[in-house]
Length: 168
Image (cartoon, rainbow, N blue to C red):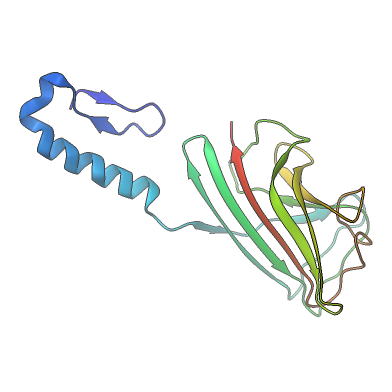
């Protein structure tokens, strides 16, 4: 093979590589499958706040991510448990290790909060409070979600995020 791609270093044939095109194509297909076809990586975000720290307790995180060169996909689903404490202030969640967003103070995806006791869902935009922390700004509030916004969180409440981001 005569060349490699910039982001993934996948080898590819060039005009002078004609005798090896069949094996080169198998190598390319294997590299693409290894890079893009693998399952998402599971991780546990850190949940913090601008005030007294919240604690997940026996609540759960179901978070996963995948990186494609300088692009990343991340999904977070956090459910509060009976021993979760909500702290004070505005909430923040960490991105996967090694992820740094190009810019803070931009919208990177969609998210929301489900108030399970009332059956109310507060949709919002995933906003970067820094290049490594995200939060949600809901449609019903002028601030990020937190210990009292859009409601006081309780057992069974769910926070969800989906982001697509260009990373450094």
